[in-house]
Length: 382
Image (tube, rainbow, N blue to C red):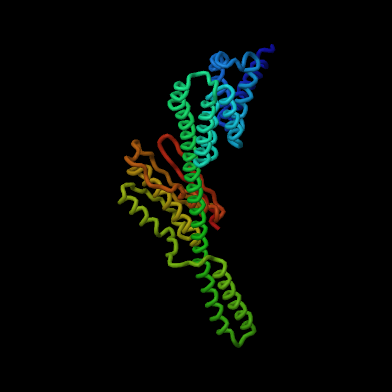
C-alpha cells in the first residue's frame, strides 16, 4: 500500500536533485569549488615527498594546511591576491608549486594582462630568492636547473593561460554588447520609422483638414458658423505644428510603401530564387496607411529571412482582414542543405519587426517545425 507514495516521493526527490545539479553545475561557484578540490587532490599526491624532504607536515596537520590553502581559491574571482600570497607562502615553507599555478591563472584571468605579468615577475623573483637561501634540499646546480626548467615555465604558462582567458572573456562580452546594441538600434530605428510614418500619414490628413476648414470658413463668412470654421482651421494648424515638433525630423526618406508594394516585393524575391505565393484579402486595401506600412514591413523582413536561410524554397504569404483582426502569416519550407557560407545578418530584423507590430497594439510569433518556419502577426484593424 505504501509502495506507490514512496516511489512518487523518490521520483520527486530525484527530479529536484537533477534540477539543482543542472542549475548549480554551470555556476561560477561550482567551478570555484571544483577548482579548489582539484588543487587539493594534486597537493595531496605531492604530500609524501614534501614530508620526506623537510618533515614539515604530517597527518592531520597536513590536511588542515592544504585545505586552508585550497579554500583561498573559492574567492579567486573577487580576491585572487589571497590565493597568490598563500601560494608564495607554500613555496617558501613547503616548496609546493601546485597552488601557485591556480593562483597565477586566477590573477591573469580576473585582473588582466598587466596585473598577471606583475604577479608572474613577483613569483619568479620570490622563487629565485627562496632557491638562493642556504639549506635548500637539493644541490645548488640542481636547484638552478630546476628553477630554469620547471619553476619559471610553470608560472609563465599558468599566467599566460589566464591572460588569454581574460582576453577571450573581453571579446565575448564585446560581441554580446555589440549584438545587444544592434538589437536596440534596430528597435530605435523602427520606432523612428513608425514616427515618420505617423508624421507623413497623419500630417497629410491634418493638412487636408486645415485646407477644407479654411474653404468652409470662406464659404460661410456671412453666416453664424464662420467663426467656428475659423477656429477649426486654427486648431488643425496648431495640431500640425505640434506634430512637427514631437515627431523626429524626417530627413530625406521615402514613406513606407503599403500593400500595393507587396507585388513588387514578391517579384523581387522570385528573381532572387525564392518564389512567393501571395494570398491578399481585398479588404486589406481599405486599412489605414500605418497598418498597411506595418504589413509591408513584416512581409519584407520575412522574405529577407527566408532568402538568407531557406533560399529556393517557396514562401507562402497570407494576409487576411476578417473581423476586427488583421492576420499576416508568412511560412516557408526549410532547406535540406545549409548555405555554403553563413549569411550576413545582424540578427536585429526580427526585433524591429516585432517593435513595429507592438507599436500598433499587435502581436508577433515565430514557430519552427522540422520542415517549416512560420511567422504570424496579428493587428487590430481599427
